[in-house]
Length: 197
Ligand SMILES: CC(C)(COP(=O)(O)OP(=O)(O)OC[C@H]1O[C@@H](n2cnc3c(N)ncnc32)[C@H](O)[C@@H]1OP(=O)(O)O)[C@@H](O)C(=O)NCCC(=O)NCCS
Image (tube, rainbow, N blue to C red; front, side):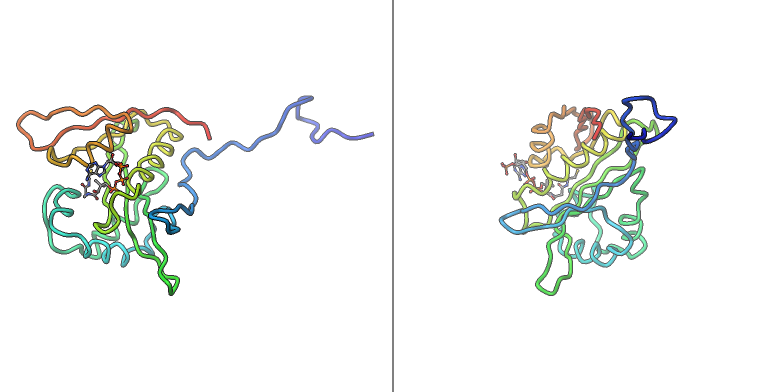
């Protein structure tokens, strides 16, 4: 005669592990421009990679990403940007793998949780030579998935009014775009659907 798996389990009950809703996403391989790339959370070990990525930006990219121009990414600031608490905030990057096996950052998408605990502010930057390959869109999709799993209701962004590419991408994802009176920026609001997986 077969024994029940557990004396305390009710008959017919399926025992499942409770999913960790706040766990950062696992690395995945995705093709962009026909080449395989890795998408994974940034870690402190990526500090030098982030500094190299920043050095590849032209002035316009820095201004559009950070809202103003600055010349140098200090090691301290780079550590802050890669060393976020990935269970609360989220900082994902797309990496290409070089022939010697080393990784190079091609794109970053991140959000940080706002004080209300239900909304978060996003930012993206993609290497100039790797634009229009779908990297920002893939990162945005992941940010939305993780935000939905963590119970967030909305992702927001402040985007320069002239940044038509970023605004088009957000609109395509279902965002509403609002003018900010007296500012050069628009306010983007992207509703997040709760996800269970
Ligand atoms: C905006 C930015 C992140 C877009 O990254 P990307 O990887 O090139 O975007 P994707 O390839 O995922 O684009 C997806 C869709 O968004 C829209 N889009 C993206 N860039 C666009 C552009 N320059 N012009 C018009 N539409 C654009 C298109 O609909 C595009 O789909 P398609 O290529 O099939 O037409 C990138 O140009 C960038 O890093 N800009 C500088 C930094 C910045 O502006 N950051 C935003 C701060 S919040």
